Image (cartoon, rainbow, N blue to C red; front, side, top):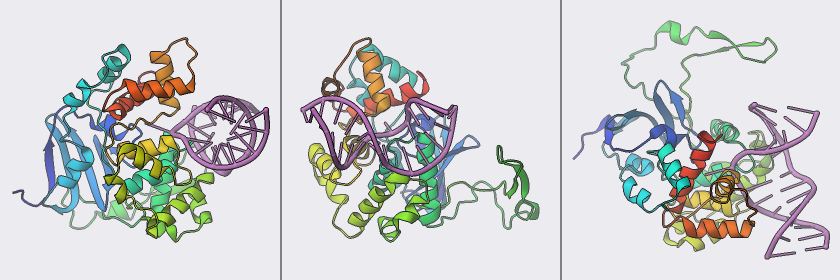
Length: 320
DNA sequence: AGCCAGGCTTGGT
DNA sequence: ACCAAGCATGGC
């Protein structure tokens, strides 16, 4: 029986929090003071990498931390997963370079919506679009004043804006507060977005992706499309179902299946992973797309998606 | 300035 | 069944 508390230590080894939260599977976590702050569901959370695990702080008392262990997948036996990877040089290098990288278990709707917004966008830009979407349509969340007992904020911290030069803004200075807490909005529900207009969504800089997100939100909001039902399907069935949504092809479907539903066999192939496959496994060879997909589908074993995440992060961070 | 970005859809052979 | 263009937007 756990006592209700606003903080806990999740004991876990071989968990690289930074690699996990910054490897393009999720888009809202922000680094700050050796910690990561973000929103999980309706909760503000701060996570800190410790030697013996992950320290978690949140707003409001928590009696049962299962939701967080589930999101972070701290119970996953990483060694058991790594043992299923093919024993070849590229995979060994990727695992060595990204030791402790995990695949999260995210909320299906947030994951789906985020990846609908991801097509032909760099990760930094996906983050910006998602941030705008949450600011405009999410519910405000109260961040915890963790670690500092502040009955009332010091007057100079609140009332005195810091003059800050925004770079490249032609000499325009804007007053900003130094104490901004980063993410303070929940991810908008399908219902909320279903009531928005396409123009509203376009104002979040999502361009041609706006009608796709809007259509998905409306289909889910009115019950025509059931994200929960996908949990009871097998991988190919669930994949086919997701691909019925406008703007969702094989790659985005695979991302959602892997990052939200825990289908470890899903193997998203984007430009980075395709590059990894061609350069690491078929150097200086012309390989047809068809054959490459067959290789991807057969070579990496039951946790292929996990292997894919190692290749992806390896290519992005270590191979430039 | 031009190319590319965790792609998908559509219309051409 | 395969190929290219087009799609918004921003960073480099």
